[in-house]
Image (cartoon, rainbow, N blue to C red):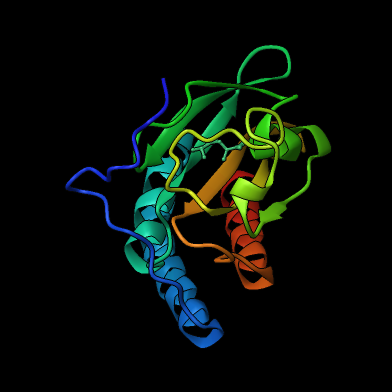
Length: 173
Ligand code: SME
């Protein structure tokens, strides 16, 4: 089942930010994440809080969440905020699968330009651009990927990559 293009009442379309606004929003979100997660060791609580506080400040975050490594080269949806996510994603499929397979951050300026069902999986047709990052534990094992989608094209860049890699390393690595 894939979601309809009609946004539910509690979901808003993305608003892109310029570089200065983006940096200020990440700095504010990080301050709040640090204050919230001071001393926290529970992985799910960390994921939930990171999703919520980033989505609160970054106005182009349409869908944000974690896909957890579960079983042999498979991902299953974990904590997220947004419309219905795909439940399972094989490492061979989508941008999430590619991030897991290559253990490298992926930035996609236009999701609809990718082959659908193979290179990109459209859980929600409103997603137009995305960033997906691998998440490692302290033993450097892949435990999840972190996926952010925007309902606008070209929302993600090196600023997102740098801040998100820093947050994920600090809280899971
Ligand atoms: N972006 C993904 C699918 C997950 S949803 O966007 C939440 C992909 O193609 O891997």
